[in-house]
Amino acid sequence: MKVSKRTHRNIFVACMVFVMAFFMSGFFTIVNVGIVQNFFFLWMKSFAMGYVIAFPIAALAAPLILKLLSLHLEITE
Image (cartoon, rainbow, N blue to C red):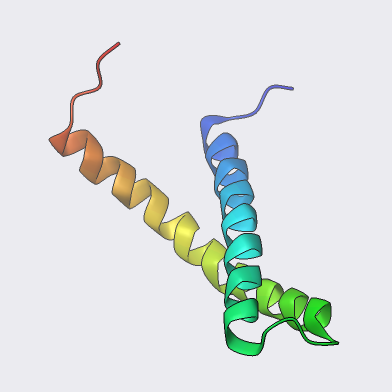
């Protein structure tokens, strides 16, 4: 499937945020409440809130970070 560079970046950001929010919310749910009877519900609630917050932040930050890196780093083959 062919997609634009922008679409590719957005899909990448969405996938990275999904993975990061999923595992971090699970970890911090265990740290904060332990493995309790409604653990899975608490984890998914935390994950949903984390994803909703993290995706727009990552979508805005990624292009800025890439631009800053390109100004200071040279990519070699």
